[in-house]
Length: 361
Ligand code: XIL
Image (cartoon, rainbow, N blue to C red; front, side, top):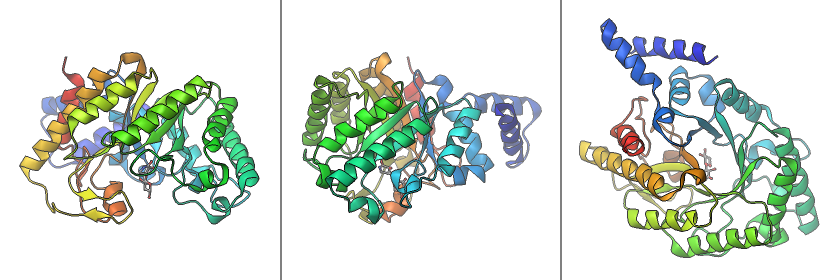
């Protein structure tokens, strides 16, 4: 399968413009098969939609060349698997896991419990109803993928957008803080080998939120709740302070847990974290902006290498990795160029920057 994809990919390369002379072609091919995953001292992941991947040879080539870990952008979420009451739909999630296996990639599960986009039949449950639903849902899903999904974002975005309060999700409203522990214990019972993460955003720039996250994780460890890692989404903005980012990682590394940069992208424009809340101050790319983005990707890779001890590096995952497909444009309703590949699926300076940050000794 991997060889077949490589052949398809090389065919695609040759199909791009005039075929280069034979020796150059060999060099280009050699470079192409040495992806980020081959130069990184930890897993490098990409988040994908299996529907897009299935119909797009060029996208598949990027994924199989560059990444050693795969996350599904939406197909393993509760709103996808449990969209209809009383029936779970694993079709797309199964295809995604099969793709990862066929290409020798680690599969990461995102996300068992997340408040966003849920159907009404879930959001309206009372305490007993929610407890029963969550227990059965998590048990069934984690058991379904036991031994095939390496780790899970068990809970996603349990904190408010800003500050350290727990978010008033339907789970919280029904069960209070208890839903978090229930989720981890149920997932662990279903697959004792799976690495279990808490995942959130904004903690790299909001110290109160980071404090609350670290406190929660430490408390969970002390009371024997099976949690193994912290996920930092890192939907970063160009203006974020890299000194704060470094401190955050240092602080999190002190917990001794696995650290996953789980959804990396690097945004030029600003937004208020809510759907449709983008402010488009920059409307086109310049060489200077692209170079600044490359520098920052390099710095982020370096900070991760420097601050996270090797046994705690679960890796860095990109959340969409082409500007063509980035969720940032649709979700915040603004233009942006936050990823490693441009609208034509060509590597940007950001790609080289990130790679430099991985490779430098
Ligand atoms: C996003 C997807 O990329 C979009 O396609 C979807 O419409 C909304 O969710 N934090 C997360 C991810 O944890 O699950 C989100 O993914 C992006 C923000």
